[in-house]
Length: 443
Image (tube, rainbow, N blue to C red; front, side, top):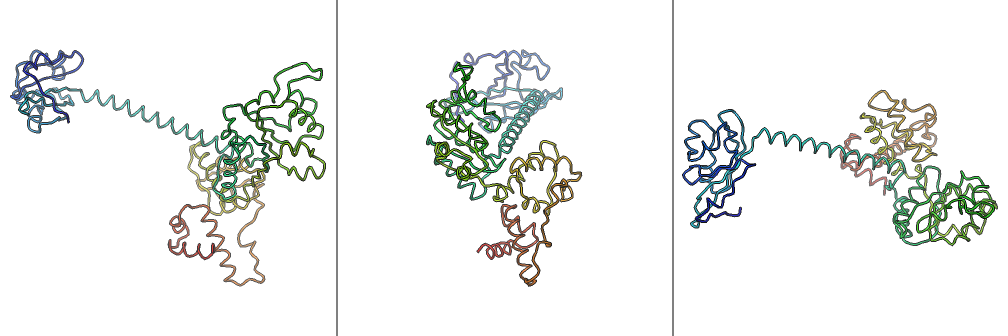
């Protein structure tokens, strides 16, 4: 602590305070200076304290303990809770002021009513709780938004490789085609490419090709009527200095494809084009269902997004994230039974993220127990059978069958749990056994 020294005219240098309870004593404990509110905590006028000894006041029970002797003894700043004769608790802090011989010449103390501090503490605690709640809500909203869009769940090697490609091509103004099933996350990847591109400060204009009638497509794209008059700003103009996202480009008729290609050539736009399709455009070209010239215009960098059923690591993470999300939304704490989780990993999931989201919410809402089981599945999801019924007994020995089951159980556990210690606890075997068995099947 920085040491404070008083000059010979120190008393004149002490500034009287009208807002704080400040008391100055000399080395003998005599009160030589007070502020106007001093004594209020002891139900005494400030003038009654001047000239009094803190030792005498302590002996009379006005307050206890006195701060001056503690500061003199320790020669440093001291803070204690003082009890007044009226039972009030006062937080008092004493600061030593030294002379040129490094002796404590004066002690300056200031006080606060502990009850006032408790009110302040309660307010700060309440404020902290509110901030924590707000942070939690923001985190939940952020997580929900990420999950609703199938955002960046990349536990699988396939998805990690896809993101590497995104990072590589995003800064380049090159046309991209995203191919994948409905709900697989094409729009999310398109947004990610836009956000990592040089056009990120520009607009991201989404064109739902499957919903615009052929007769309206030219007007929507260019803003022009058949007469050539300008009706409104077209989507191509809106996309300037940004990204034009053609969702469902494979749904365009041949006539609409011609309109689109003509508009793209005439606009000479300063925007990036990202297309999304559920069908393979090369196959559509071979079947003469997609214009070859439009194909070469759009199909510069193709990116295939695999369905969730082919990305078990991502599927497992998605199931758990949606489960956690709807547990919070509906303020419950439900869990999936291991047989049900195994069942979910082997489902088709033709709707991908959208279907997983839908089913997880239904299970949370409709199940009546904290552990959700296969019996809680909607009827339409009870067709898939797994387990011993699928094992081929003919031509297989019992050890071979047991080994197959053991491998499947270990592989599923590895997808669900992060460490071998967790796996060992759930499976009821030792951690070294888990490591040994994993090495056996992985190698």
